[in-house]
Length: 67
Image 1 (tube, rainbow, N blue to C red):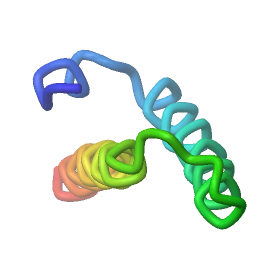
Image 2: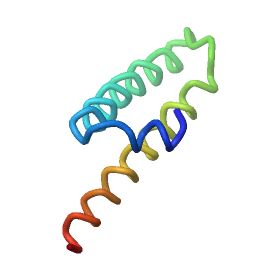
Image 3: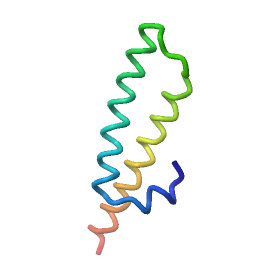
Image 4: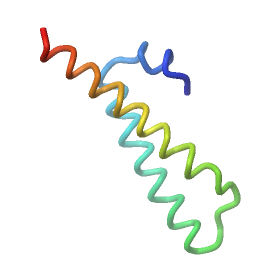
């Protein structure tokens, strides 16, 4: 997901996205351990998406508090 798309989302949507991605990461880790994971690159993609969403949330929070 592009950063421009993240900036268009509401805070609630970003929080829900982070929660969903963390659940997905947990499932991906279980699949990797069990040897059932087909797309190993998905773990990296999900981690980066979580980081992007959290970064955007933090930037918004910082912007609100600085005013």
